[in-house]
Image 1: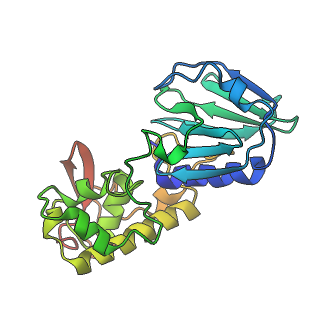
Image 2: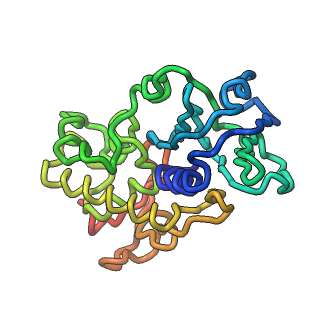
Length: 271
């Protein structure tokens, strides 16, 4: 599933080519995504210039003069910028053309993403209104995490993966961040000190920033806007490395299931 670094990589790749350009054609080849693509999408977009693209969590928000296009990549989605005459792929479901130069294609084999429109304030949309803070913004601090944790007894890994607390810390990035912070993934969120939360907030930013710089993590089927994979997977320290030696202490990495997700950690380095 594309996570925050993959979505941010996509946003940056699209923005440099499409911001300021006008939509000249729409082709919805398959409207049955997680939620139906609006039947009047062309009415909203045709002739409108794309002002800018921002990201909120794992949602891409395309700003136009009269509203926002909201896109989520779901489990297997991707966005590609190609020439309008590029042959279609089987799962290219929504095509948005910008003049004679660029076609933005939403590709989603599992159809679990979404392409929606809103004319209301976009950050008040039901999909976005209750999201937590952005991990790369100043509001995300160790103090914030400790306050949100309160006296909660749930595992800290589950806690930081809650999008109502902080957005975009997916399974891979949670495991990697906890390793760098030296925190065991099953530790109770409410029992972690402020000092350790400050370290965790720092490592979350570090891991996400590094992944964005490397184009995201490809473990299955994520590709960027040019159809290329991300390379952060080559630097993973614990994720998907069960039984392999820890890069710090040589202790074998362990794997458990936590919150129905595979979780990797070093039993020596993380306490």
